[in-house]
Amino acid sequence: MFGHPRYQDVNALLNAHLAQRTPLICVHRGTGLGNVPENTADAIEAALRQGADMVEFDVIGSSDGTFFVFHDGTEPHAFDREDDIRALGSAEIRALRYRWSSHAAGLSELAEVLARFRGETLFNVDRSWWYWDQLLPFADRFDMAGQLVLKSPADRQWLDKLRRHPVKYPFVPMVRSRADLDTVLGDPDINLVGVELIARHPKDQLADPGVIAEMHQRGLLCLLNAINLPDGVPLYAGIDDHTSVFGDPDDGWGRLMERGADIIQTDWPDLLGRYRQRVRGTAVREYGRWGGRCPSGNG
Image 1 (cartoon, helix red, strand yellow):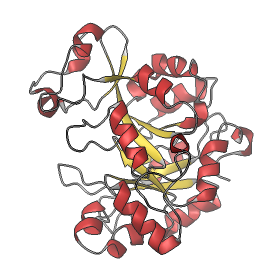
Image 2: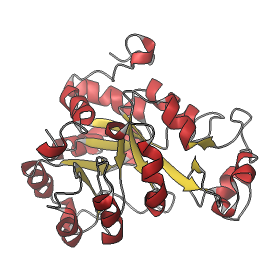
Image 3: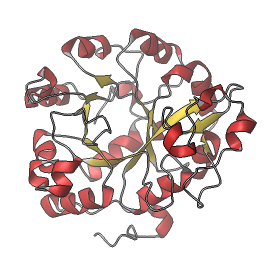
């Protein structure tokens, strides 16, 4: 069981998924393929149909306090505009249309996503920490704390907000150094279930496989990020999706699994699911909506 026993009830769903299969497949921004934009309710649906165990999404807030699922900074690609849409009111954001897609009407509101996937779906909620004073009470209304795994940098200002909030959401901070680990470990008022280890190069101190073993001894899971960012900066020692998809997956996802990854974040859920099934004998997650196996046909 990952996390402190005092929070075992809220962590029950996450631990149940991990007991059934490891590593969990966490899909970056959902599956935005064809004319389906990433970070939308339909991209989440598509990721689940492709075998995701967890879906990562990003959050922005409008100038008048409505939350949307979107990654700030991607406005030029999404809408062919350079301005930061977080400065817009909710009505203006609702009126936006993805410039290259006829499928999505516009941005998905966070309330829509939470209502649509309430139940068994695990989410990794990214880039939301700026809004936690308002966002955490908003999320409380949906009574789905066990589904929402929060992340943030290992910064005391964000930890303080989690410490003060009465609902103890599972928390997996992004840690980049031993100092970050020291900052997040051992706080009884934060529901720390694990860490996302960020290692820019193979000789980084957090790229040492012994760190994962240490976290496991502490009862904490490790999320390793295999995605390839546009800027080319590695997230975990250069062991990534591109190596796995265009080379030998044993040299990519296989190495992450050998090191003990409990969650792998990827942009390629179907391929990672097939690989996991081959090497671990673990079928792609059953998606309850479909009354059986995920429609991808795996397992």
